[in-house]
Length: 278
Ligand code: DGL
Picture: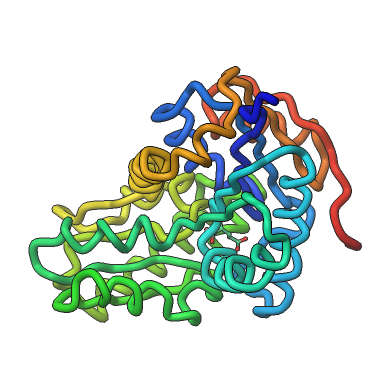
């Protein structure tokens, strides 16, 4: 039997995961990919632990049922609030070869090496910031690095509702940058720890203090996935290499197609899917 039938599933609450998928597909174009955006229930950032876990698990199970062997949670909120439970409780219950990876570990393994002042700023959703995942994980790899966090509750709305430029975007982007830099002027590396935020890059760069490095996660996650598949040959052997890309959304497919094509940088055809009880 040919085992190499599996896809790589990429999940986010909405459009943000497309920034990670872009980097992954560029690094590993040979595989088959299925993207799922839970746009109908986005944003996840201000939802409770239980809700984020429940929604994420439903989406992961859907991707598994659609033939994904490996699922990447291209969402920091889901990685912070649901990944551990899925890896430690739900996957062992299945007892099969399916695996789920997040975006926090691959980021925290690398981000501390980018700072010269030893101070990293982390912009994230309320859920990611409150979970403390970034300071805890960065301290494991770079104990001397100071982490300053800022929750930006409006930023995901700006992206999901196509308000990435203009007065509203300027106001909310500047507000949070001012806050974090006024708390710690030594930050020289600013991490966009929400996969939606790179879509605001142009506006963020307008208000970013000079000399500060702005870091998106896509490249960091792609680099670590290449390494993971090199080490996990049993998983790699299961992945089909037909270079297909499929997209699904829990919200309106035509709207998703327009936005996603823009963010992914090539035409996207999407299917509407029903997941959970809205
Ligand atoms: N893009 C996701 C993240 O990285 C989720 C944002 C949200 O739904 O609030 O955190």
